[in-house]
Amino acid sequence: MPPSAFQQLNPSRVSKADQRQGSATATEKHKILYEVSQVFPTQNSTARRGNATDPIYTLRAGQHEYLFKFKIPLDNGCSHLPSQQSRPNYDPRAFWEVEGRPQLPYRHVKRVLPPSLAGFGIEAEIRYYIKVTVRRSRFKGNKRSEHPFRFIPFDPPKIPTSSKEVYARRPYIFQTGPRGEVDARLPSPAVLTWNQNIPLRIIFRKSDENTEQVYLTFLQLRVFDFTEIRASDTLRVKTNSRTILSLDGLAMPLWAPSEKEMMLDSKLWDRLLLPSTIEPSFETCNLRRTYDLEVGVGLGYRGPQNEQVCVRATNFLFF
Image (cartoon, rainbow, N blue to C red; front, side, top):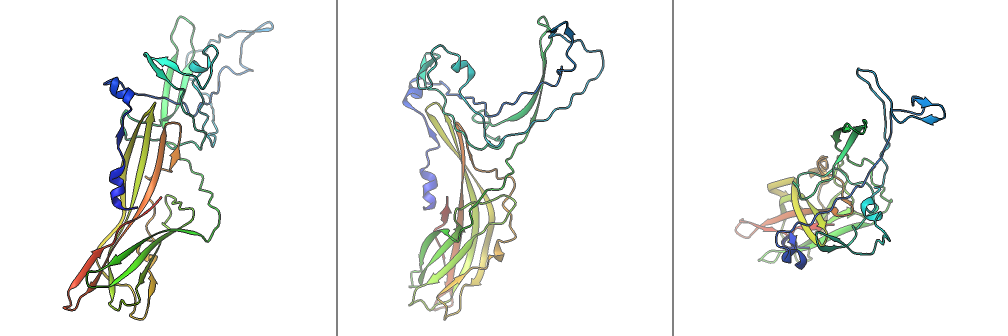
């Protein structure tokens, strides 16, 4: 896939219905995790009057602490909103009206809990927080407090052991004739894990008639992330890139004259760890995050007049 494919992504696709509504905004809210625990009063501390339980309990003045704990599940628990489920004759395939516009029920995806997501302003957010509610008498408002926290799934990916690889192959050719091809390879499936090195192999081949010494002049690794934001029938794709490695001005000979193929020494990138700022890929009800790894190489050789001739090979993309 050529680099120009990045430019073919439509960053903003608005439906005809939204165009008719002018400045109307499509929004969706999903509750992907909801755990409840009552820490006071407990069954032992509840005041009793005869055989009946009194729902009111008076605390003495002072500071009170109550321990609690939650076990965060592996998968999300997103479902149709209770307000929609409580409608008479509820049918998840039916339409309903919101501000005079027909709406379909939300699309729900049962997958691994996504990581916290920020940086998109009001367009998209995945927020985890602990909320404490103190219920008071009906004539006094309840007191609430929230404490946000960052969540990142820490389970390592379960990758089956296999000798298979995925690869991208690009030919190269100089105007004076030297030609060959370059492979960039990753284990299959192509999974990268943050805080670990990139298991990349780069292999160079030359054609039979090529006798010139070819040099590596440039090497770059970049990670592209794509975040799909969907609300109703509106889709936006946000793209960002991070440079992991960029080496320019190299003059590294690739092979001896008698060799036809060689593998680039992985010491050039072995010590590089995938940054922990790169969150795991995920898919939830209306958000999706995927990544591409781009490998860029540049080649050169010295011509008849001992002039250095360079060519930038087409970049490689892994999905």
